[in-house]
Length: 260
Image (cartoon, rainbow, N blue to C red; front, side, top):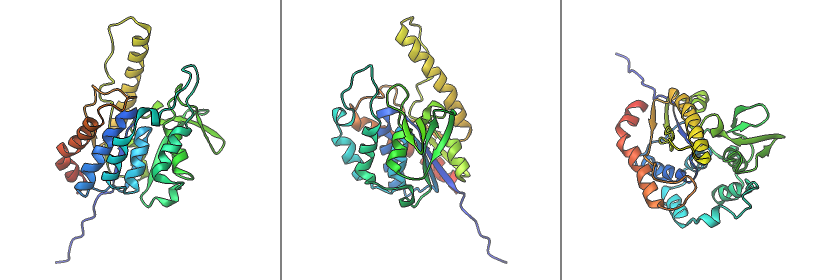
């Protein structure tokens, strides 16, 4: 009787955006590395693009933990006039701490960051040239950071259209897709008539529709509970690391089963 060959399904992981909640991604990376789980394709949006890049490079979780523990808000986000943009250069410089001028050709695993082409309104896969530049484009939240120019095109945060790039990972070739959603709390509305509260509630609800589309392309969507953590604060770093790690560990059996 001839031997039967079983081929492992091609797998991919999509790291979603969420500002400084992206620290939870580092906890997730720890759990993945310690359990020898590797994905064939990796994509990330906004803060998730930063996590995806370091994960694709295989940087040990211990180094990542040390980096985020030492980070301070004033070191990451410069002071500015609130009527003006932040320059996205701050993201590029932060990314270069690890990437040190690397291009996508220097990353062995297929990895891409997603961003929105501001002129044509399409989600684009950034997977060539400078990795740090692509990450800054993926993190360029509209109205907060300046749009980033790459190849004569202007790009903003990919979360404008897809907060978790699960569809992108599947298009890259993944048969099994794991997504990480850092904003599972965004579905809430408000009973306030305050202008700011109404605007934020409307924004959250629109992102909720965005997330529902992302969920259609995921075989499993991990949702670390980060409701109590602001998206632009570096407080409670240890708690976010633990929550990200625990979410992977709680779903470890399911992830391994899918990947067989």
